[in-house]
Image (cartoon, rainbow, N blue to C red):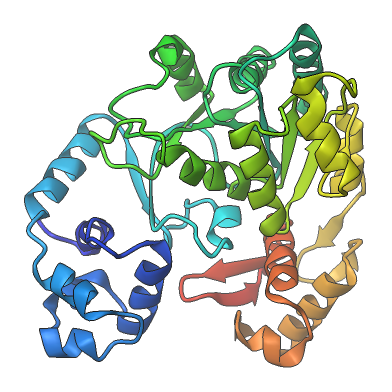
Length: 368
C-alpha cells in the first residue's frame, strides 16, 4: 500500500496520548504527520506540547498494519475518511477546539449544508414529546434544514424518522465504528439514512459502543450544527444535558421545548430555559427567527454591492478582507477586539453565506 499523508494521520490518531488538540498542534508545528513519524527522538522532544511519554509512544508505534486494514475497510464499504483539513470536513465542527482529528463518514448528505440543526432528547419519551418532535421537523423542512442526532432510541430515532418521511437529509453521529450499528434495532433505519443523510463517527472499525464514547460523541452532535434542540429530558438526563452544555460552550444556540413543571421528562428542558442556558421554542418559526433564517441576505458578485444584513462583527471582518486580500485567522485578533468564540461564530456565518472562504492553514479570503 502506498503510504500517503492520510495514512500517517490515521496512524498518529492511534498513538497513545495524542488527542485531537495535541494532534492539530503537532500538524501546525511540523506540517505533516509523515514528517512527525520520521523525526528522531531528540527532534520530537524539542517540539512544544510533547512529553517524553508522548515521544516514546510515537517512536514505538507498531500499528501501521492496522491502519492499512482500516483504509482497505473504508474503501470496501464506501466510507470516506475526512481529516480535519479536508474540504468536506464539517466546517462548523472544525471551529471547536476539541473537534476530532479524523472523521469516518458514509452517506449522501452535505456535512456543510447551509442550515443544520441537532435534535436530541430522552429515550423514554412521552406522546407529547413525539408529537412536538415530528411537528418541529415538518416545520423545519420549509427552511431546507439537515437534521443531526445520535441514532439512539427515543427522540433521536423519532427525529431521524420524521426527517426521512419529510425527505430531509438526516445524519446520525454514532459512538462506535461504522462496521456495526448500535442499537442493533436501528439497522434498517441507518440503511435508509444512508440514502438521504448518512452516518458519522470518529471511531475506527472494530470499536464497540462503550459507555465512555457517548459523551465524546455528543460534542460532535453539538459542534456539527448551528443549534441544538432538546425535546424532553430529565434534569439528570445525561446525554441531552451534556450536549446542551457543550453546545453552549461552543457559542451555539440551544433551544428547549417546555413541558409540565411536575413532569420529570421535562425537568431538564425547563431548567435550561429557566437558567437562561436555552431559549424556549414551540415551533420551527421560533428557531428560524432566532437564527436569522427569515432575514433576506443578498450578495451581488464582484461588484460587492452589499444588500446583506451583516452583524457588526461580520462587517468588521468583511471590511478588513476588502483591504487585505488574504489574512490568517489569528491576524483578526490584532485588528479587532473579538473573543475567540465571537470570531469563530462570525467567520462561520460569513463562510455559510458564501462571502468568504477558509483555506487550509486558516487563511481567509473573500469569494469573488
